[in-house]
Amino acid sequence: MSPRAAWRLETLGFAEVYDYEGGKQDWAAAGLPTEGKLAERPRAGVVASRDVPTCRLDERVGAVRERVRAAGSPVCVVVNDERVVLGVLGEEQLEAADDERVERAMRPGPSTFRSNVDIEEMAGFMIEHDLATALVTTSDGKLVGLLRREDAARAAHEEHLRHHGTGGEDEDG
Image (cartoon, rainbow, N blue to C red; front, side, top):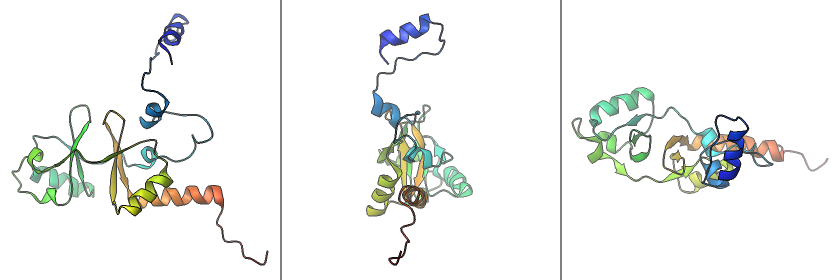
């Protein structure tokens, strides 16, 4: 909304008014509610698991490894205090020495995807590129969650069936 509209709403008594400058795509990428024909389609941010293990740069790999295994996760996402993704510890990095600092062991700057990516598109990309997981973030890099390929494929399949039916009619009518 424009600054003028935001100010007008405040004069009308609305207490929580925001002047959002990012635009419609950025709004959707942040996982905020949308309207219209495509609003009901599942998106990466909705399907992504929010309970992915996170760690800090100054932690030791041994302690992080224990948490990650206890959580049953294939990765630990390295974040700062604002939950901005700085790196990732995958299976290989989690095998570093127990006393190794996360900062030295991590893969810095991992690829991330926005919350508003259509789940069918996301599933296709993950299958085509053989990605077991994908990090989902806001446009400013804050962690939304971890999307697993099997979850994306299942949600995409369910969405396809919802819109196109089973496709199982026999030819005899």
